[in-house]
Image (cartoon, rainbow, N blue to C red; front, side, top):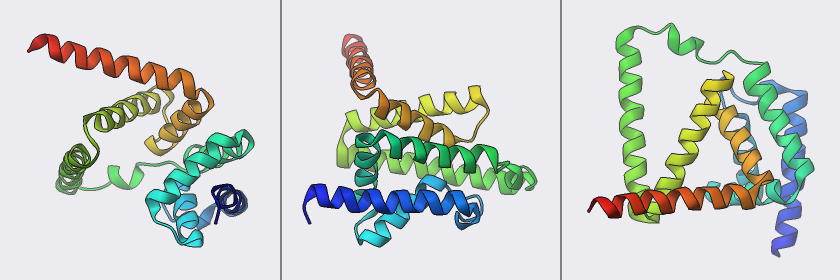
Length: 182
């Protein structure tokens, strides 16, 4: 299948799933992520890896502003308008909360360590920056992290050149500051 044909098929699957989620939000599993639902559906229907599906989803959203708009509207509807997230965590006992936080803490460090080995420092730094920016957005707007990261990705796709240049500029200044300390 050619790249253009693959993108066209992916676009149809993405649009179809956006429409499905909008018409029946309950198909996104309880407390599940709407964008992940679309991603996993794309992976399953095209019989490709989740990483390939993620790349393809990004390409389709980047290349088609209308699909990008529909996608972010779906995410906002599920994560901001239809849910009150965090309630299930807040009612747990302190020991259960601490165990959950500890597990996530260790998993993130292990994932970043693996990314450092497999992809290098630039990718890990970029990942940390995106996570930090999206968390700041989530805090300031008062939304969940899934919605904030999708809002950030939407903005970055829409302003690709500018956001890329800003990230590179920051990364270069960051490395320069580290070099000066040595």
